[in-house]
Image 1 (cartoon, rainbow, N blue to C red):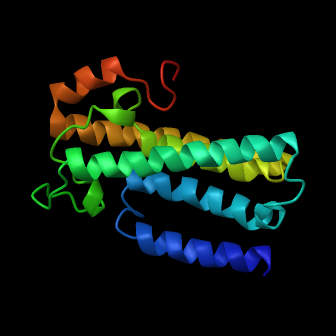
Image 2: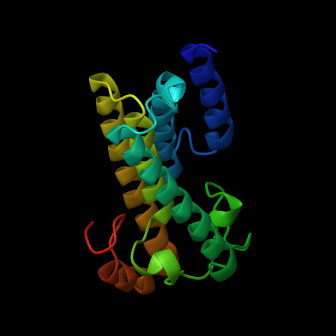
Length: 182
């Protein structure tokens, strides 16, 4: 399958998922869309290299990042669903159902980082890049990472608006993406 076809299919899926926030620059979903598009481009170029030279250092690092990403997203979503108590009572149309948390989650992966799902996307972004690192793809991965950082900042604004001082205090105790570091 050609890279352009893969990119077209992924873009169609991303547009379908993101349609509610595509034209609202005040939502985190707007910026997440552009990060996803960058990641889709990198994947569409690098999917053919997924298992090439499986024991090279870049492939090993890539698989470590992918496994860690899976851990963050799986346990992050489980905690959001169990402890975050998502509810449609939180009337914010730009959020996915599982994002409409009514309780602040401060345990598990959320005890150390505020954005395990966006951290997961950042690590996936770089893991996909490492399958076949090229200079122009490094630039795209960097831009996608910046968009995920901006996404997180807008998400924090939304959380502060909903949870207030409780979220501000939570921010003081946690890092954004990497425990104890950043």
